[in-house]
Length: 359
Ligand SMILES: Nc1ncnc2c1ncn2[C@@H]1O[C@H](COP(=O)(O)OP(=O)(O)OP(=O)(O)O)[C@@H](O)[C@H]1O
Image 1 (tube, helix red, strand yellow):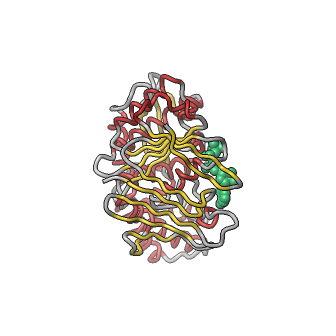
Image 2 (cartoon, protein in one colour):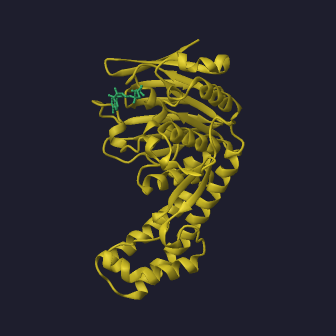
Image 3 (tube, rainbow, N blue to C red):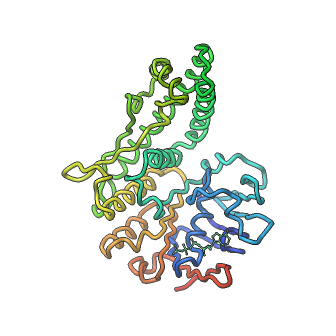
């Protein structure tokens, strides 16, 4: 089963785009601002969530157009649609029937590497937690529902804490829910880390493998036992009451990465090394997804690699059971693909992007 077709209407700089896809990688090239990343963003909307720019649906409609945006895709023998009218959240259709966003994650896995992720290792833990949860979601589609259940219980507990409600009975019920879903979150994250770690070993030597760990203070990180989490939360309650919010728990987890002979923390590595590490994780993520169609989006990755690493990346991509789309400003960046890849030249005139397939 593959993604066979993508069409866009009024999505960002694209009034229209119709693209037939097959197993071959697609190298999208064109000048800065021509609309290359917008194609990848549209593809990322085939995953649950807000896509690779974390954008509000209202910002994704083509400026000056009142009708909202629309994306259609063929995945195997199913037709998938997602769209948003101005000011509204996005809706999902599978074979013309309304479906929840999480249903997308069961049809196809979309994973991406974009320049905004360059600061992953030096940013706040929240950025790495979101990254880890996205990786986890790609491997375990139920992760989204579990995260929602945890967030809902935590928000209610935070409301009690903020209002300085002291009744232990209310807390016990919410803490039991948080402990149940929090334990499942931790189990999923640990199993995603294990799957990625195993898949890293199969990659090219040009992309370093990292030792990944689930981190958080106060011992919550690898605790996947609901009764022990609930007991910890009860102990923390006085401190949480003083702060007016839940200070500890799986919602504070962090992803640690060390690599190389000196076991260097990723945050202390050079910009290029951090990027190679991230690329290694994304490729491992794609390799770990063996039972489902995978779309891999690499935005402006080629330009930051030397010729040797670029060739290694293209060889890896050719060997992946994934459909890959890459962007770069010039066709020469993709020469090492040879005839393996399709080339799509993107241009923009008068605010409207257009694409032409080239040899
Ligand atoms: N809602 C929108 N409506 C119309 N145009 C938009 C909208 N959002 C973004 N754009 C335009 O899309 C262009 C950016 O597209 P995109 O990020 O895909 O470019 P790119 O080809 O990837 O560029 P670069 O090589 O610089 O990363 C900008 O010119 C921007 O003005």
